[in-house]
Image (cartoon, rainbow, N blue to C red; front, side):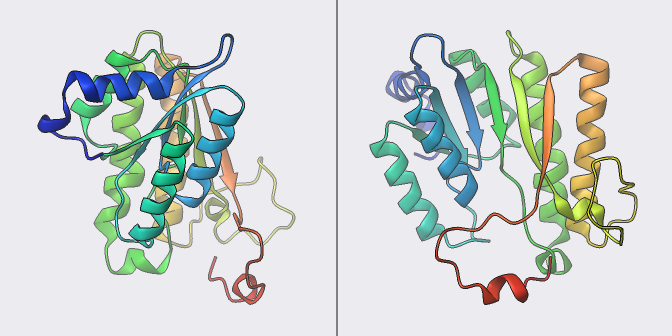
Length: 223
């Protein structure tokens, strides 16, 4: 369901609360990028173990929107309400945190890809930097503050030729705008943890591949 003034109704709020309802002692999680490959699997796994889950996704066209809609339907069958909205929408985020006392935020929404940045650089700033700050601001203002787990990227290692990579390696030579925005995200996360005490854990994803994928895609990947 797309977020908007027409959806800001008691029925919409009821769906959010129902989706966020967890078993006793379990978590209540807001998952951004919930209709994506990783986000949909995370949402389903959390719901399966008894956590409350509310999904958020903007359903943009970088990846096939029909696949995202199909995942949205599958998640709704499992009791996960996926809202169509943008992480830069301050009013939407405030509304969600007013309705639900989320214990955690799983932030998986991002503008992905390396080559696409050459055509549409603004989308990376909008999603990966501005969107991250908007989300952190909402979490900072929430009561109670949720713990945040967010997806950085292995691309932050950039031109580093040392292998295997280590978390202690320098990451100051990004090789793409995408990598630069993810590196900036790590610095922003550190700042919000240092100044506001937000509990934030980031992880650098390498390859996220489904079962039965054509192995040639791995060899030809530009990442």
